Length: 203
Image 1: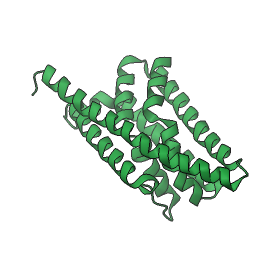
Image 2 (image 1 turned 120 degrees about the horizontal axis):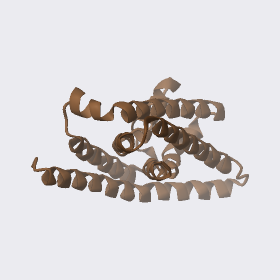
Image 3 (image 1 turned 135 degrees about the vertical axis):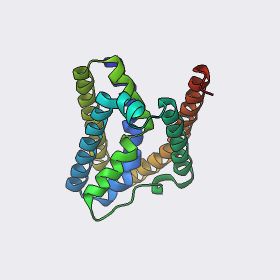
Image 4 (image 1 turned 60 degrees about the vertical axis):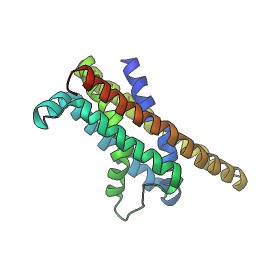
C-alpha cells in the first residue's frame, strides 16, 4: 500500500500542480482558492474511487476498449500538455471564471485526474483490497492538499517583494522544465501501450 501511495504521488506530482495553480492563487483571495482547491480535491477523490472499484468494468464491458488504447491516448494528451507548457509557460491552461465550481472542475480534470493517475487507480484496484485502495486515496489526496496549501503559505510568508519576484521567476522556469519531464512521461505511456499491444498480438 505504501508503494502504491508513493507511486501515485509521483504521478500526481504535487510540486508541478503547485506550479500550474500559481496563476490561480495570485488571482483569487485565499478563502476562495482554498474552497476551489478543496472542491477539486473532492471531485478527484470520487472519480478515483469509481475507477478503483469499477475500472476493469468501465474499460472492458461498458466502453469495450483495450486499456492499452487508453494508455496511448493519455500519453498523447500528456505530450500535448507538455508542449503547451514549454511554449506558453504559466499562461497555458487555467482561466479564471466567474463560477468557482467550474474552476474546481477545470483543476480536477485534467490536472489531477489524468490518464496517468487513472491508470494507477485501475492498477491499484487490481492489486489492493478495496478498503486499502480507498484509504490510500484518502492519504494521497490529503498529502497533496496539505502540500499545495503549505507551499502557498510559504510564498505568502515571504515579506520582501524582491524575494517573491525571484520565487515567481524560478517557479516559471521550473514549470517549463517540468514540461519536458511531462512530455517524456507521455511518450513513455505511448511506447508502453504500443509494446503491450504488440506483445499481446493485437497489433
